Image 1 (cartoon, helix red, strand yellow):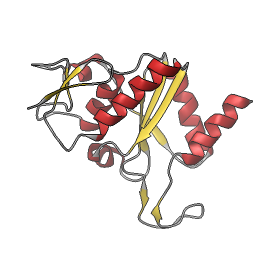
Image 2 (cartoon, one colour):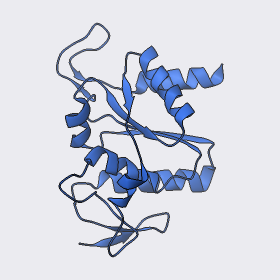
Image 3 (spheres, one colour):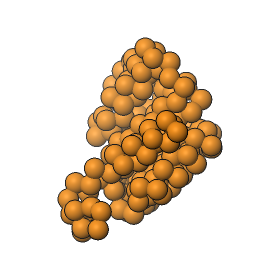
Length: 171
């Protein structure tokens, strides 16, 4: 029931104290934009259990608002055997986090709440860059079984994708 002010100045209704990571990430995103004005932003986090339900351990959820940048990230994931799959951020999802007493809520509400999507919609509220991609890596951050390129345990998922993105941008 608390209301907090984010780095960006937006106010946030805290409806779930277990969704604290997105508050920190939102402030980090706003800070980076404020101090560095990047052309593009790529972030990743083990953000939601809902993404685990949606994607399992096979792929990370990919969110953003520039289709060409999202395709670029998806291709980098394919190149590195770190699959990502785009999920929508339609305006209806942003409506689910609209605040009653503050600008936004820290979680979506209602029985039909798509948790991974509303978490990404929350982050989108702190992004000004035209190119932004968010990976919800909650399901892929831990490997239950070894693969030829990955031991069992913590996967380090998205490190290879980040490297591929950097190399591709340098070409």
